[in-house]
Image (cartoon, rainbow, N blue to C red; front, side):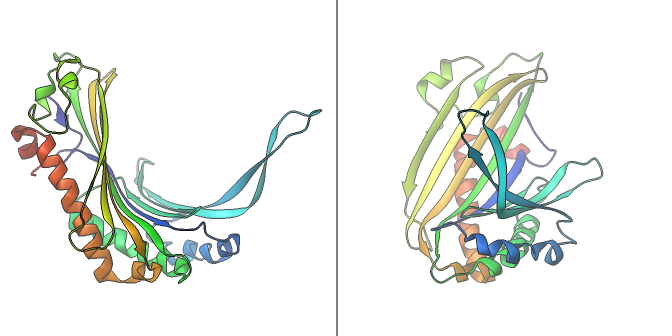
Length: 258
Protein backbone atom coordinates (compact mmCIF):
# COMPACT_ATOMS: atom_id res chain seq x y z
CA UNK A 1 0.00 0.00 0.00
CA UNK A 2 1.20 3.52 -0.71
CA UNK A 3 2.26 5.25 2.49
CA UNK A 4 1.89 9.04 2.87
CA UNK A 5 5.24 10.85 2.89
CA UNK A 6 4.71 12.11 6.46
CA UNK A 7 2.90 10.69 9.48
CA UNK A 8 -0.01 13.14 9.37
CA UNK A 9 -0.07 14.06 5.68
CA UNK A 10 1.57 13.42 2.31
CA UNK A 11 2.70 16.99 1.57
CA UNK A 12 6.29 17.43 0.43
CA UNK A 13 5.91 21.17 -0.23
CA UNK A 14 3.29 23.90 -0.37
CA UNK A 15 3.98 27.08 -2.36
CA UNK A 16 2.20 30.43 -2.21
CA UNK A 17 2.71 32.14 -5.58
CA UNK A 18 2.13 35.73 -6.66
CA UNK A 19 2.85 36.62 -10.29
CA UNK A 20 2.87 40.28 -11.28
CA UNK A 21 2.04 41.53 -14.78
CA UNK A 22 5.48 43.02 -15.41
CA UNK A 23 9.01 42.08 -14.30
CA UNK A 24 10.33 43.99 -11.32
CA UNK A 25 12.68 46.85 -12.26
CA UNK A 26 16.38 46.29 -11.53
CA UNK A 27 16.27 49.46 -9.42
CA UNK A 28 14.19 47.51 -6.91
CA UNK A 29 17.08 45.19 -6.04
CA UNK A 30 18.50 47.57 -3.44
CA UNK A 31 15.11 47.71 -1.70
CA UNK A 32 14.82 43.92 -1.74
CA UNK A 33 18.13 43.63 0.09
CA UNK A 34 16.30 45.07 3.10
CA UNK A 35 14.57 41.69 3.45
CA UNK A 36 17.83 40.31 4.86
CA UNK A 37 17.27 42.36 8.03
CA UNK A 38 13.46 42.36 7.99
CA UNK A 39 13.25 38.57 7.87
CA UNK A 40 16.50 37.64 9.59
CA UNK A 41 14.77 35.67 12.37
CA UNK A 42 12.48 33.76 10.01
CA UNK A 43 14.79 33.26 7.03
CA UNK A 44 18.40 33.72 8.17
CA UNK A 45 20.05 32.58 4.93
CA UNK A 46 20.11 35.35 2.32
CA UNK A 47 21.30 35.24 -1.29
CA UNK A 48 21.19 37.94 -3.96
CA UNK A 49 20.22 36.64 -7.40
CA UNK A 50 22.12 38.03 -10.36
CA UNK A 51 21.29 38.29 -14.03
CA UNK A 52 23.37 35.76 -15.98
CA UNK A 53 24.46 36.99 -19.39
CA UNK A 54 26.01 34.95 -22.19
CA UNK A 55 28.32 36.57 -24.70
CA UNK A 56 29.09 34.90 -27.99
CA UNK A 57 32.52 35.32 -29.56
CA UNK A 58 33.69 33.37 -32.58
CA UNK A 59 37.24 33.19 -31.27
CA UNK A 60 36.46 32.41 -27.63
CA UNK A 61 34.14 29.81 -26.11
CA UNK A 62 30.85 30.90 -24.61
CA UNK A 63 31.27 31.97 -20.98
CA UNK A 64 28.60 33.30 -18.64
CA UNK A 65 28.99 36.62 -16.92
CA UNK A 66 27.03 37.80 -13.91
CA UNK A 67 25.31 41.15 -14.22
CA UNK A 68 23.30 43.26 -11.81
CA UNK A 69 21.27 41.83 -8.96
CA UNK A 70 17.85 40.75 -10.23
CA UNK A 71 16.19 39.33 -7.13
CA UNK A 72 16.68 37.67 -3.77
CA UNK A 73 16.34 34.23 -2.25
CA UNK A 74 15.95 33.66 1.48
CA UNK A 75 15.61 30.39 3.36
CA UNK A 76 15.69 28.60 6.68
CA UNK A 77 16.98 25.11 7.41
CA UNK A 78 16.60 22.55 10.20
CA UNK A 79 19.34 20.95 12.29
CA UNK A 80 20.00 18.45 9.50
CA UNK A 81 20.58 21.22 6.98
CA UNK A 82 17.34 20.57 5.07
CA UNK A 83 15.39 23.56 3.83
CA UNK A 84 12.23 24.26 5.83
CA UNK A 85 11.07 27.57 4.29
CA UNK A 86 12.01 29.60 1.26
CA UNK A 87 11.15 33.00 -0.20
CA UNK A 88 12.13 33.97 -3.74
CA UNK A 89 11.60 37.31 -5.48
CA UNK A 90 12.73 37.18 -9.09
CA UNK A 91 11.58 38.37 -12.53
CA UNK A 92 7.87 39.00 -11.84
CA UNK A 93 7.31 36.38 -9.11
CA UNK A 94 7.06 36.34 -5.34
CA UNK A 95 7.06 32.73 -4.12
CA UNK A 96 6.95 31.46 -0.55
CA UNK A 97 7.40 27.70 -0.06
CA UNK A 98 6.94 25.58 3.05
CA UNK A 99 8.86 22.28 3.12
CA UNK A 100 7.90 21.52 6.71
CA UNK A 101 4.12 21.41 6.60
CA UNK A 102 2.31 21.25 9.94
CA UNK A 103 -1.27 22.42 9.46
CA UNK A 104 -2.99 24.87 7.14
CA UNK A 105 -3.46 27.43 9.92
CA UNK A 106 0.19 27.32 11.02
CA UNK A 107 1.66 27.28 7.51
CA UNK A 108 -0.63 29.93 6.03
CA UNK A 109 -0.11 32.31 8.97
CA UNK A 110 3.66 32.13 8.56
CA UNK A 111 3.45 32.39 4.78
CA UNK A 112 1.24 35.48 4.99
CA UNK A 113 3.75 37.16 7.29
CA UNK A 114 6.52 36.59 4.75
CA UNK A 115 4.36 37.60 1.79
CA UNK A 116 3.23 40.86 3.41
CA UNK A 117 6.80 41.81 4.31
CA UNK A 118 8.06 41.29 0.75
CA UNK A 119 4.83 42.47 -0.88
CA UNK A 120 5.10 45.80 0.86
CA UNK A 121 8.34 46.43 -1.06
CA UNK A 122 6.79 45.32 -4.35
CA UNK A 123 3.50 47.23 -4.18
CA UNK A 124 3.13 49.31 -7.34
CA UNK A 125 -0.11 50.73 -8.73
CA UNK A 126 1.30 50.31 -12.25
CA UNK A 127 2.22 46.64 -11.77
CA UNK A 128 -0.84 44.64 -10.65
CA UNK A 129 -0.99 40.94 -9.95
CA UNK A 130 -1.91 38.64 -12.80
CA UNK A 131 -1.90 35.31 -10.92
CA UNK A 132 -2.39 34.21 -7.32
CA UNK A 133 -1.49 30.55 -6.99
CA UNK A 134 -1.18 27.71 -4.50
CA UNK A 135 0.84 24.63 -5.48
CA UNK A 136 0.91 21.48 -3.34
CA UNK A 137 3.06 18.43 -4.02
CA UNK A 138 1.89 15.24 -2.26
CA UNK A 139 3.80 11.98 -2.30
CA UNK A 140 2.95 8.39 -1.42
CA UNK A 141 5.58 5.65 -1.24
CA UNK A 142 5.04 1.92 -1.87
CA UNK A 143 7.64 -0.47 -0.55
CA UNK A 144 9.94 -1.97 -3.17
CA UNK A 145 8.73 -5.46 -2.25
CA UNK A 146 5.06 -4.60 -2.81
CA UNK A 147 3.20 -5.46 -6.00
CA UNK A 148 1.96 -2.23 -7.54
CA UNK A 149 -1.76 -1.55 -7.52
CA UNK A 150 -3.06 1.86 -8.58
CA UNK A 151 -6.00 1.37 -6.23
CA UNK A 152 -3.66 1.43 -3.22
CA UNK A 153 -3.50 5.22 -3.52
CA UNK A 154 -6.25 6.32 -5.88
CA UNK A 155 -9.99 6.07 -6.16
CA UNK A 156 -10.08 4.03 -9.37
CA UNK A 157 -13.36 5.77 -10.31
CA UNK A 158 -11.82 9.23 -10.01
CA UNK A 159 -12.62 11.60 -12.87
CA UNK A 160 -8.95 12.62 -12.87
CA UNK A 161 -7.64 9.20 -13.94
CA UNK A 162 -7.67 8.06 -17.55
CA UNK A 163 -8.73 4.56 -18.59
CA UNK A 164 -5.24 3.89 -19.85
CA UNK A 165 -3.66 4.89 -16.52
CA UNK A 166 -5.74 2.21 -14.82
CA UNK A 167 -4.16 -0.51 -16.97
CA UNK A 168 -0.71 0.95 -17.71
CA UNK A 169 1.11 -0.85 -14.91
CA UNK A 170 3.33 0.71 -12.28
CA UNK A 171 4.69 3.61 -14.37
CA UNK A 172 2.29 6.16 -15.83
CA UNK A 173 1.67 9.91 -16.06
CA UNK A 174 -1.49 12.01 -16.42
CA UNK A 175 -1.33 15.79 -16.97
CA UNK A 176 -4.48 17.91 -17.25
CA UNK A 177 -5.99 21.32 -16.58
CA UNK A 178 -9.40 22.95 -16.38
CA UNK A 179 -11.05 26.25 -15.50
CA UNK A 180 -13.69 27.02 -12.88
CA UNK A 181 -15.47 30.13 -11.67
CA UNK A 182 -13.86 31.46 -8.46
CA UNK A 183 -16.19 31.80 -5.49
CA UNK A 184 -15.04 35.11 -4.04
CA UNK A 185 -12.76 36.71 -6.63
CA UNK A 186 -13.02 38.21 -10.07
CA UNK A 187 -11.29 36.48 -12.96
CA UNK A 188 -11.12 32.73 -13.37
CA UNK A 189 -9.79 29.74 -11.46
CA UNK A 190 -7.32 27.43 -13.23
CA UNK A 191 -6.49 23.95 -11.97
CA UNK A 192 -3.35 22.21 -13.27
CA UNK A 193 -3.05 18.62 -12.08
CA UNK A 194 0.04 16.51 -12.74
CA UNK A 195 -0.07 12.92 -11.45
CA UNK A 196 2.76 10.44 -12.01
CA UNK A 197 4.60 7.43 -10.61
CA UNK A 198 8.35 6.94 -10.42
CA UNK A 199 10.31 3.73 -9.81
CA UNK A 200 13.01 4.30 -7.16
CA UNK A 201 15.27 2.10 -5.05
CA UNK A 202 12.84 2.65 -2.17
CA UNK A 203 9.83 1.59 -4.20
CA UNK A 204 7.19 3.27 -6.34
CA UNK A 205 6.73 6.96 -5.52
CA UNK A 206 3.36 8.41 -6.49
CA UNK A 207 3.36 12.20 -6.91
CA UNK A 208 0.27 14.40 -7.03
CA UNK A 209 1.24 17.93 -8.07
CA UNK A 210 -1.74 20.31 -7.97
CA UNK A 211 -1.38 23.97 -8.92
CA UNK A 212 -4.55 26.02 -8.52
CA UNK A 213 -4.56 29.70 -9.38
CA UNK A 214 -6.77 32.75 -9.60
CA UNK A 215 -6.14 34.56 -12.86
CA UNK A 216 -7.17 38.18 -13.23
CA UNK A 217 -5.99 41.73 -12.70
CA UNK A 218 -5.56 42.49 -9.00
CA UNK A 219 -4.01 45.56 -7.40
CA UNK A 220 -0.60 44.69 -5.94
CA UNK A 221 -1.49 46.68 -2.82
CA UNK A 222 -3.90 43.86 -1.88
CA UNK A 223 -0.88 41.68 -1.05
CA UNK A 224 -0.27 43.54 2.21
CA UNK A 225 -3.89 43.13 3.36
CA UNK A 226 -4.41 40.20 5.68
CA UNK A 227 -8.11 39.78 4.82
CA UNK A 228 -7.45 39.60 1.09
CA UNK A 229 -4.63 37.09 1.56
CA UNK A 230 -6.77 34.85 3.75
CA UNK A 231 -9.82 34.96 1.51
CA UNK A 232 -7.80 34.27 -1.64
CA UNK A 233 -5.59 31.49 -0.33
CA UNK A 234 -8.38 29.89 1.72
CA UNK A 235 -10.29 29.49 -1.55
CA UNK A 236 -7.25 27.98 -3.25
CA UNK A 237 -6.66 25.69 -0.26
CA UNK A 238 -10.28 24.50 -0.42
CA UNK A 239 -9.91 23.84 -4.15
CA UNK A 240 -6.81 21.72 -3.47
CA UNK A 241 -8.59 19.71 -0.79
CA UNK A 242 -11.52 19.15 -3.14
CA UNK A 243 -9.25 17.77 -5.87
CA UNK A 244 -7.45 15.50 -3.41
CA UNK A 245 -10.76 14.23 -2.03
CA UNK A 246 -11.85 13.26 -5.55
CA UNK A 247 -8.49 11.66 -6.35
CA UNK A 248 -7.60 9.47 -3.35
CA UNK A 249 -9.31 6.35 -2.07
CA UNK A 250 -11.05 6.31 1.31
CA UNK A 251 -8.12 4.69 3.17
CA UNK A 252 -5.66 7.33 2.00
CA UNK A 253 -8.06 10.16 2.81
CA UNK A 254 -8.35 8.76 6.32
CA UNK A 255 -4.57 8.37 6.59
CA UNK A 256 -3.98 12.07 5.82
CA UNK A 257 -7.08 13.20 7.76
CA UNK A 258 -8.82 14.62 4.71
